[in-house]
Length: 216
Image 1 (tube, rainbow, N blue to C red):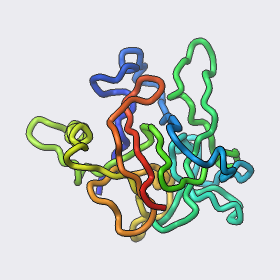
Image 2: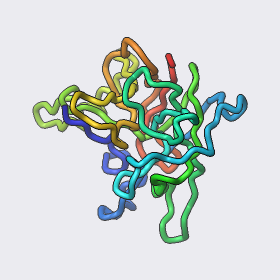
Image 3: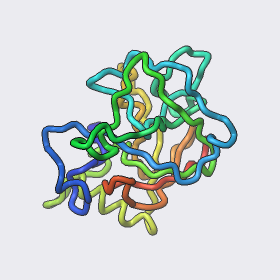
Image 4: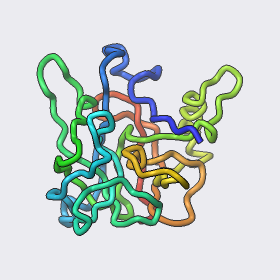
């Protein structure tokens, strides 16, 4: 299985691509469309990130993490049935007049304190914090795996897609990559998952998807 990050800036139709410096690291962005946790208080904000989040693999907005305060650290899920699952939604900001764009947020590492909202059924967000398996969305003819994925996203009205936890495989250890929801073709049999509602854009103009949580 070869996991790939969802395209953040390099796809035709992406409004920020024309301003992109190819040597600059961009991070995922998130928009909360309709979520309950700000009103219900189901927010974890005083628990540090675990050791898997480093400068090379930081915590990004839109990641799914285990919001278990009793564990003493915020870490990626290891299995689809881990709970409670929350989404990282730390406040994004412009750093200065020369580096504009919310996609530059992503500097949370081990020991930092993210803001995590515990997800519930019906919660809906828009994000590009996603990944996919290029042995599921397979390159064919003159189309790359990325283009095949984008074609599938455009056809969700007839062939639905879902987002789910990327479980830790046998002989693998949990990593920051396990916190990135995976786009899948079938709803998982157990654990949290969401259904993709719309192939859309994130607030800074980059490509993303809107998904709704169906089961927790």
